[in-house]
Length: 240
Image 1 (cartoon, rainbow, N blue to C red):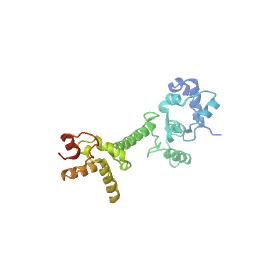
Image 2: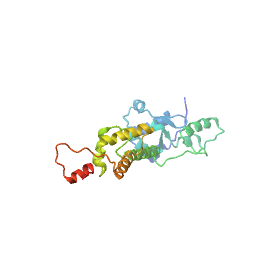
Image 3: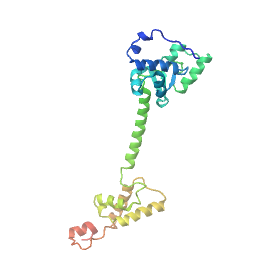
Image 4: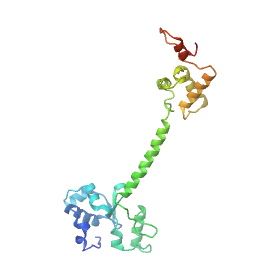
């Protein structure tokens, strides 16, 4: 049976006095159930059975405040004052202390001077993780935004309908270009060169611009059964 020091003055401390009875009992339960480094494997189902109280993790975190640090993705809680109260200053030449040091080092809870690393709040560790996740998300979002900046992508260059939509929505002369012709050019260009352009919009526009400057622009066929005015004929075929 493990024996530990207990603070006989704890009932006079604001931290204990301010808690509702279920969470006072939970706190004492955790102090007994945690390992010799002050780390408790979070198990509220067992805690409720043994204390006979209905407990909520969110409420416990709020009540315990900066007395604990969540580690291992919230799967474990570290009682910040436990080590100092039980052992005082940790010494690397002490066998018992060394075991504690190894456990705390695993979760980066002590510094090079074997001092416990306290956090501003018990959730700060998770908040830092969330910030890192948000940064990663922002980076991915930035990449995705850059990737989707143009209508064409590696996956849809062979999508004929999407290709047509892009040309029809583009400024003149691109909207007048024959989508069937330039779609084939895009596919053939990709196949022959063995790679896909990063910016398909720029690539297609360059092809059309070059053809237009050389008078070789392949425009859309004339609409059938429709009266064509000279202005329309110029826009559609380039021929007055």
